[in-house]
Image 1 (cartoon, rainbow over the protein chains, first blue to last red):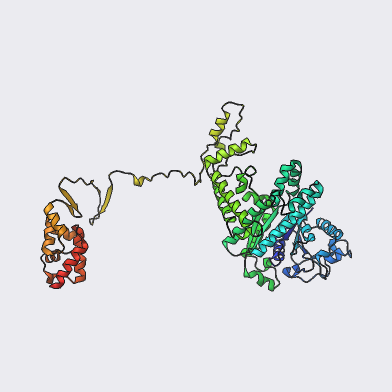
Image 2: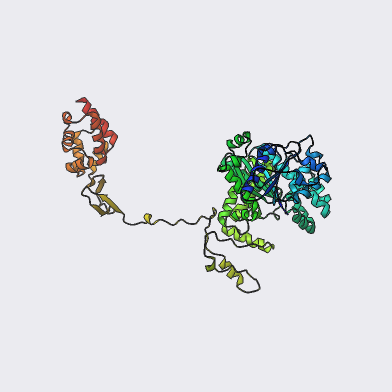
Length: 303
Length: 272
């Protein structure tokens, strides 16, 4: 079974595609083979980040059932070890993905031949995007230091957290509680998911324990992009703490990427940053982040 | 939110493990303080201002306990009573763990074991507390006693001279140039005098038992100038700007009011 990394973050234009393509190339540089998948369906442009042409076969062929294997829509790129699956090329949108096709796709991801799979998620918090995010082993939330991006990142985290809870509630039969708690004007004093879990623990310890187990694998990896100042770097620690206090979940501060003009310059040349400027500090940061993601235990040990 | 006291664990508030060393607690506190202070963009859309203020209050409260070693120990005990397992703080310094005794888990059924455990927990570690600052050891430099003054002389020798504490005999007074016998009438005359001319300055100098040579050496004014100055021989005195400097020096050495001496003598020199 392979390992899936998903790069999400809610807001558009914060560098999700850039991050996923850079992480994928970094992994190939470490000798791992990777499949990079553009799940920004409808507005796919990951191929541009990689500097390759739009492949003839895309995910829409798989989703529409024209082909039954993801291998048919996989493009082997010039970068050794990197496979690429392009998103929709036509007017289809991620919202058009029906439940059946989605399950087939998630199942297909797990049976891809490469040991690592990186999903470039689109902007927004549509249910399909959230499901791909939740299906991943490493859930990376990209955020830039702008308030708009931070707001959307939190919204994205909230949406995926509640989706996870809803998944749990149907299994555990605590639906009514969550429904009551989600009403912001409840009189139970519940204002955040952390309060909710605490409340369930108090009222029904057994259900609380099962709920905690269920959501324990919901851990977020925070990745700060376009960092310019020292305060920006500290923002990651603050967001980690807010996640802990608000969701009651452990978020990891994965690392940060500097703001660098070389990024858009390499994008205009349509050459991946990691290949164009392999010795830049940004690429060093990406390599470090890839290492941290490869070995989460090492990351915890550092702190 | 964290309003109810019973549900709050101070370690969770500061997001530190229960065995955190004081330095970790300190850093976590600073970070939490920065996070929940107003206008941190990381709070935006998650916590309202009031909630952030409450959290900040809680963070302060947690640190006031965990930041103080005694209060922290008492808090740990109260947690333990409520069934929350607490580990003793890790040692922050890189010590040889083999050489340290293992932590003894207190077993109330064995008499004396709790005391032993408490004794074992007093392993020396760097304490970073603001509530109980450790007394700073007084550096040896500030030790009291007869002071030794190092005087560098021109003859390339460094002479260590023990400065004798001033023991003035009754009826003696001190000026920067040495001691002299006090004459009440003379003191009064000096205090009353507003205009200092050459002869009067000489009178004070002889009264204070300062030889001309000594004054010349300490004030770095040539003897001829001093003689000219004391005899109101204005023609042989240097330009006013230098004379002013000389007067300041002499007034200081003799323990006189600089201003009075300079203004009155300069007026005199100008008139001539």
